Image (cartoon, rainbow, N blue to C red; front, top):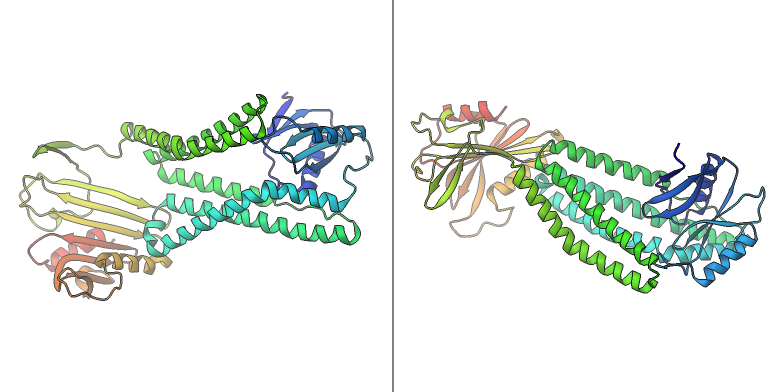
Length: 467
């Protein structure tokens, strides 16, 4: 039977009421708190009993203090004489316990208690959440700006969706904590001044747990979407590096406390170490990890290679849904066939296919096309508009007077078996580049040929790509 255990207690910093009730339940179940840190709350086994707890806030304390100050020690002695023993402390938060049936409270003046909580919360809790909220607002704004300017690039990428979701959730968490605290403080201050009563704190423990679960589920979905590809290993490596760097920073700060270095030295070294690791070491380490993953787990292996003008080119034999052989008769077998998934999510999937002759046989035609599959019908129009804008690269700007102006011209979609069809016009001349809108996919195809397409070739495109 284990005599110790470690829990992660999700409580708002100022939630004195919630923390005390939680610790009393743990004592009744046979567990006594004896240490709190960034790695969780540590409990030791005791005989189950009813124990009273009191959370007191000491604003002058710091997370970097090597040991309690004289004022803190004097306060601890005062509490011990009153029957309250120190269970654990974490910066400004001091947690005491008392086994007496009806102990005298440590805090008897609600005004002073509210003032102490407010001073301590401003020093640590609120500052952190204000910074998190500021970064969250910037990241959320950037996410929505990208969603408007490049909807397919965002919606087709599980990584972009995961990142955007996480920042939105962090913004929701920080806003809830900030608003919740100020709401409580306003009520508590008024009640203390009015009749000397203390308004019990109400944190957001359940909301914090929900946010964490949503982020973990989103990360699990991200990993599942990557399957066994190198991107899954990169995602794991990124998380491992971030957690490792965080552990190094925390452990270094704890080591300096054990070495009895002053709070000022500890704080300055911790800040410097955080900056160096965050902007230097982390980047170098991630690049190293990603390069190693890429080297031993390539996305695709070519079937052959050849040399041309001192360069080495790779040849692939992927199975394409549409090939030049489906469109014309050709007596050439030196093509490289390659298809790759540009991005894939629960909303959109984008694939790009190419069929290219060798560099020493460029007299033969080549073929390029992309397929954007829209899995959610309500997103179809948004994707179509984005692809049309990108198709002509004019984005609705007025037409200039030059021969490089691009625009899309709507053409008859019937021969293509499509719902809508568009052709690229460059400098007033129609090009052999088309955007074809089918029921659940949009195809952009480029025929770099000198002849006009026949109805049979258009039908072949519809049969191979439109379904």
